[in-house]
Length: 96
Image (tube, rainbow, N blue to C red; front, side, top):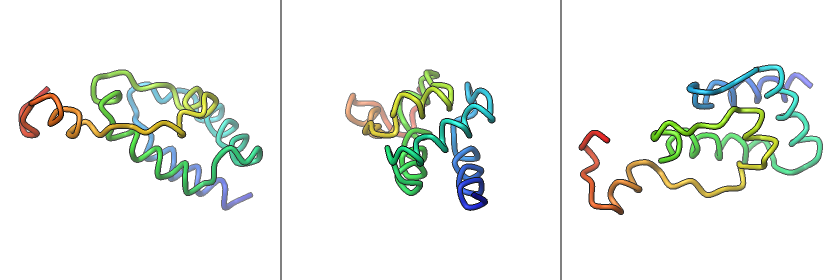
């Protein structure tokens, strides 16, 4: 539906761009997650925001969007980059 397309467009806008991949494949995976009730749209949007701020992404290990969705990585708890640095004794202002 149009609502899913609009929500996907927001999700796509938020997804880290380094290795984002194919938009059509990502949209198909997004729809499949919703259809199979593996996650709600709200959960996907919240999770992608956390993922974009994660230590994994900031270290250059972003995953392609379709693969991220197909692997249910929206269920992971991502530690924010600044939390990771603080935990290991780095200044938040210090460049990585």
